[in-house]
Image (cartoon, rainbow, N blue to C red; front, side, top):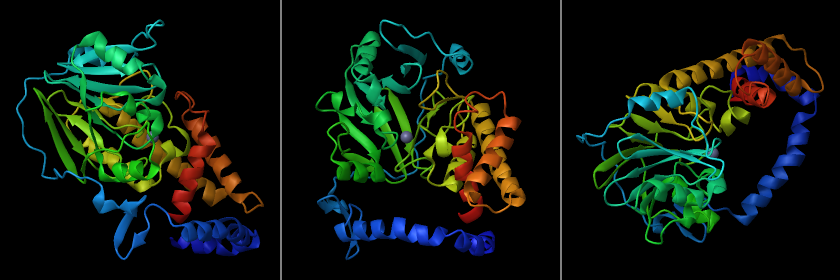
Length: 355
Ligand SMILES: [Zn+2]
């Protein structure tokens, strides 16, 4: 809590916010504590669902990324897809494109994922719920190899809810936090990963390799970035929308500080194309840089709103509305700017005031 919050405490009290919070939130918190939850600490042992987290099978590979030589390259024509998306075959409902040697981008125009052929099986990263059986259909369009390895970019079902449709002996890989969450959820659509890591993991299959890294929870829980240094392609899902305004609440960001920090960490890496999980196009470092600038501009607008808005019964609503008005005016040409300006400002107002 910063000093600014203390300045607002009399206002918060006078508006009756604290009693409202007490009646709304505290009973719920007590109820949750009484019930216990999946991540309760018990005698310093972390509990995941019905067992200790330590009992979840774990394979560590947290050594620094290896330097591996590879002849695999990104195709020059791929850069065209950072401007205009591919045509989606209306019969099939997807486009599957080889964007580099053995590296494929699959999109239905709204969701996107990638997979690699290795000579020894396919490595698939994400399986959006809405794409279902189209994923394996698209893979069989371009290779006779079967999926042998599946990587969870993060926990969210809309991006990974078709993970259970893969061959039975598929190896599921994720960050440890994703595995703990999926164990707790016990969701048949999202099989619990058997290979997990904390910081870094290098996956080598056949003639391909990927570096998986945990750079902080930029969006949800267990968010990782998936990097092919040889292709100069990176995948970070739900961090941002290339060439468009963010999804609501700054991409449902839990921690704006982590969210911004991961922008910087990715911009310091060597890649040309990013698979963002959404939009009809691939992203570039310029798109990511723009999103960081946009996020900081919304923060500025939130601060301006805090400095210029008079107290009222709907003070927080007024702050978000003022910030949204400034943002829409400033970025009137940006795709989807008018979809969630208030929600995005709510996140930044709270970040500016109390984070
Ligand atoms: Zn998500």
